[in-house]
Length: 437
Image 1 (spheres, rainbow, N blue to C red):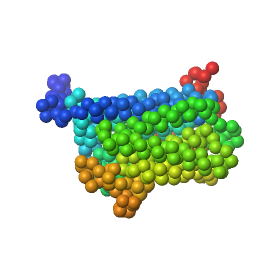
Image 2 (image 1 turned 45 degrees about the vertical axis):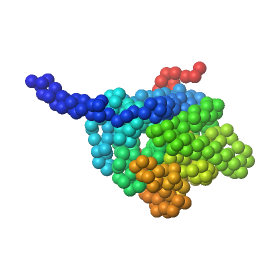
Image 3 (image 1 turned 120 degrees about the horizontal axis):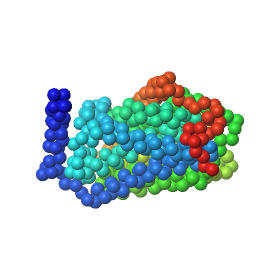
């Protein structure tokens, strides 16, 4: 009787899904848009594997290289499964102003003909995977702030819960008709959802975990800058999928997003390089690579709203500000954010989110749903800057408080930090029994 009851509960759900799959009523799927989104999805995944994996591995000490790369692979795998189980449904169904519903748990109701309301010309399977890659890189970025000293098991538990408790709600608030979207907050491809969110979580985790042993007295220089530059290059190329892919179409807006992404990255690379040259007397390879990433971060929320002139200004400002944050601010406050997740991603995301409110232009941001476009200060709408500030403040506050609570719970239950002996030996051998030799 119990089996019959279970089947009786499941059949209506399956029936509802089958109704949603009705092929006769399915919207037209555009092959050009679909082809572009398949490519964009692969590009964004490449940003984590191998982009972030190489970028981070090149910046840690030799004894922690494999452990750092392992984190990216494991996080990508964990987030994928959790996204299928509940993440996508809670983030990208309409639900309410705070969270979606459970209509897509385990991706029920999705087949080759279903589409999402935010991506009506591509299969929903493509769209959900595209959004998955955003969740993957957001979580992978956090690991850079706690490199060299966090338990692998504790990191996975923290990331898994953080995805569902922090990332999923913020994505819903901003992108799927949540209360930040209703307030008019502009975030085209993840300045708040991805970069501020991850940067604040990383800072919180780094502060609660404490400094690396020997920080400030021992040499902690990057072990292989060539790997870091290769990783940064993969991030730069993959970012075209990140930003231009957020158009969810092969159209003019995607083309403009691609152009402004390139311009902002280049401008920020030169800006960081110049600032470092002036302050330290010579430009560094790590500096110019970090500057490019800072520009990519800053243009992310603005990429579907600004013209090339706005992108140039955003890049120049972001490069200089992020250099200051990753050097002077970090030194004055004394925190050990190992790979500058806060200085580059949180600060860069904040700069980009606020400057979106300055440089957004209606001619770029107009869509079928908003024919007049969304504008910022230079286009006659100075109030947008205040709206952007509101979005930043909410994201910083929620991510900071929730991340602190989650990290505290993980630390109390299982301990977050490796032992002193394990840290000195290196995480490659201590946690994984492997080494580069």
